[in-house]
Structure formats: C-alpha cells, structure tokens
Length: 220
Image 1 (cartoon, one colour):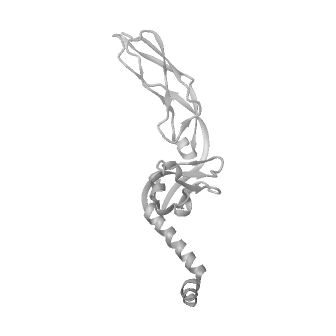
Image 2: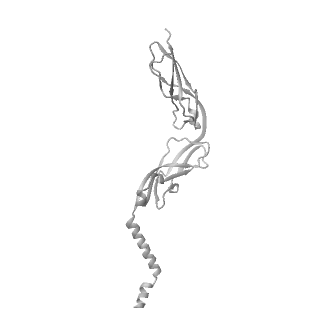
Image 3: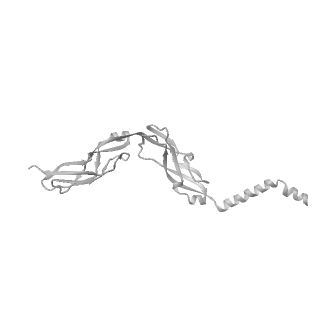
C-alpha cells in the first residue's frame, strides 16, 4: 500500500501542486472577474513641442481606443486614465504624418489595447510669429434724421496677435464686435471686444476696446 501511495501520489508531487495552484487561480480569475472591452475617446497629447512652433491644422483627431481587461477595471475605467501621447521632438515646419499605435497609449495596470483608430494622422506645422494688426470698428444702427457717421475711432488702435506664420500674414485687420450707435448725436463711446477671424490666431491681451463714434449733420 505504501509503495502504491508513493508511486501514484508522491511521484512528481511538486509539479502536481503547482498545476493545482494554477488551476485554482484560473478558476477564481474566470469565475470572479471575466474579461470585457470598452471604447474610450481621448484627446491626443503632444509632448516636447519645439519652441516657437505652432500646429497650423484646424482639425486634430481624437484617438478612439478599445481597451480590454477585467470587468472590475473596465467598469471603473475613466477617460482620464487613458492617454494617447505623440512626441514632437525634432519636428520642423511643414506637413508630418504620425503613426498611432498601442505603443503610444498609456493605460492602467492589467488592461491592454485592442485597437486604436485612427492608425495614422497628418498635421501641418509652422513657425510661431507675432504681428501688430489695426483694429477696425464695426458700427451699426440708425442715426437721427439729418445725421451721418463721421468717424469711429478705436482705443487701442492696434492689437498684437500670435499664431502660425502663414495664417498671421494672411490677416488684414482685427475687427470689433458690432457697436450699436443708433440715435447718437455728436459723440459717444462704447466698450466692446476685438476678435480675429482665424481660429488659430490669438490676441495676446484679450482686453476690451473703446470705440468713440462721432456723428455730424449731413450737408443740405
């Protein structure tokens, strides 16, 4: 009986114990926390952006990332825990195509990337420049009979804008929001805001603009 016990029970006992432990762990893992997938949309982060370089593409895609992992982790997965990172070190002005793969995605532990969309995207880069632009007031309204608009003077008369070189050079002026000068006789001053039409151009100091409207009597 002892020989039989040693022959069938104790033979390769170490391997048998390890196999039993692995089987038990797998049973618990499958039984208690099955695997699931979820799609997460995240913005693409750009690291190490060269100094004095601007992204001049108006549309920057988001990354659609399918993530797989235990249900408990997938259920609590927040968008802030998934990061799509592109390194811009060494990028120069012009067009550039970037690959977007699982290697560019940072995830919590015990999760993995199943798919990334898009797999590639293209951006255009340009030098960052600044420029002084004249402020052109926009005056609307109906004046009293016999009066017309003589002048509309902004203060300040110029603003500084910053952005991609080609876009900055293409601008003619900065415009104010419309000023309703209806009924003005003589002179009146209005406070308004200034803006530029290009969404990639920004005004360095987003301060209010005062527009002084002067009307005069029309010659008979």
